[in-house]
Length: 331
Image (cartoon, rainbow, N blue to C red; front, side):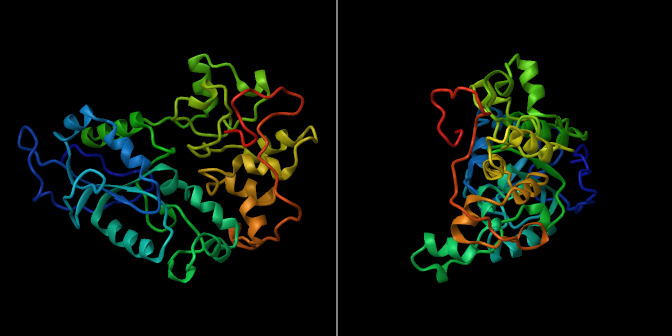
């Protein structure tokens, strides 16, 4: 494993576990031990790994997958050279497990919006957790869950992040290649708008008036939504130094869209990532907080839920025609 890169993203030195139990790759060098674990998530990012299909055979020559429940019945308690973590911390058991897993992992990589941002389940962080639980489960007292769903990095050091819902297979391969060759992964930190320009995609916001988060969202998806004539809804999370508050002000500038409607644009898979989190809070929270009467737990304190009934998420700029095939939620 001499060629494997040391983690640098978060300054975590990792754990220099030996690879004495690993099987040798061609040339006699032990392969890095890789594991994939799941917390609160839909398994979509794990399926992205499996969707590499034939490429998995090539990867298996460089890595030994010792624990991956989605793909194999083989299990390992560690140590791991690379640990991929999907899902948010949402239960007391998750809190315990993530600390134990971090001790066993030399490099910890969070994969997907749930692990990096808290996921769609983090929308409950603005609402009344007990009210949600009682509305969903007939015997809520049997359900052990935390009041907040949080990203992995809030609890343990994370070495690398792969964002998205689901992750990009290209970014996954780039990270694995970088680890095995001993170099820094080349993952772009730029807005989705740049991807649109490279692909010659006409701006849906300028040309059709569709509200789009592409200006403040990190690329990685290939601008798939704008390519299909839809606005980006931020599934790769905010890019570095994203001016979410500025975009929110622009979307309200005409006076025809309420603060609540603009807030719903940011309240998706990556809502709990800053600065989306602060923008949502400043604009009044989420629909769930209003429906359950939740006081919220965001930004270090409670806030009073605004009055009035919740409305649909606005997806179009004022005065522009709607596109067929897109509903009032902009999906």
